[in-house]
Amino acid sequence: MKLDELKLSKYEKESEISYSFGIFPTFELVKKQSDKIIIIILSSKLIISKDVESLLKLCKEKNIEVKYDDKTINRLSNKENCFVIGVFKKYQTNLICDKNNLVLVNPSDMGNMGTIMRTMLGFGLKNLIIVKPAVDIFNPKVIRASMGAIFSLNILEYNSIEEYLFKSTNKKYSFMLKGKNVLGQFTFDKRNVDLIFGNEATGLPDDMLNRGESVIISHSRDIDSLNLPISVGIALYEFTKNN
Image 1: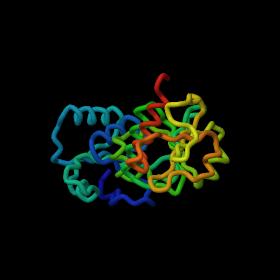
Image 2 (image 1 turned 90 degrees about the vertical axis):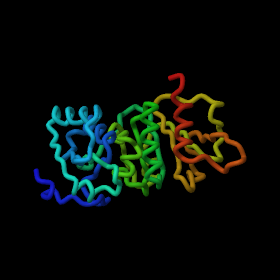
Image 3 (image 1 turned 120 degrees about the vertical axis):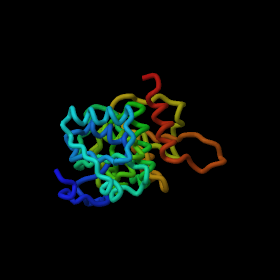
């Protein structure tokens, strides 16, 4: 396939394809979602290392096309140190039934989104529910911030919090500054649980106080709140310990 036939351009939300920038996210793409890949593009400046050799070997095993093309690399990426790009078709996934879910309501920051994806995978959670409006999960900035963790997750999006609440039957733990339960001072249920977080600016609406259990993460009065990825990391550590 000729690259000019693909007519690749900078990422757009409305496009049916997206990109993984960098060798590690692209390696995860090849390992986890190889059937979605259109082509892997390399820069002539790429230094052949063990990681690169492993990537090329895996691409060969999975019959994935690899081409060198500096012009396309430069056109798609704003970073001078981007030497590998994976081009893939956007896709939909289904949650694993009877498992615990992380729920993000209206997340708005791409870097935070990617960091949370990597964090939840690190703690063994693979089900992610996103309530819109929300950041575009297939934006290359999210993919890079996740270091490719996105390709190991099962993600389901709802159009509103009302739709999510209507369809979800899991027990709910809502993390809020007004939470009634202090994290670390109670015992979580461990099965069929939703851990719910609001967005970076406004958190969750007050009516979530009456939806299952509300939880507060204690911190000093020197700050008004913890940022979202830190809160998620602390909550997941407490939730998964002693499992």
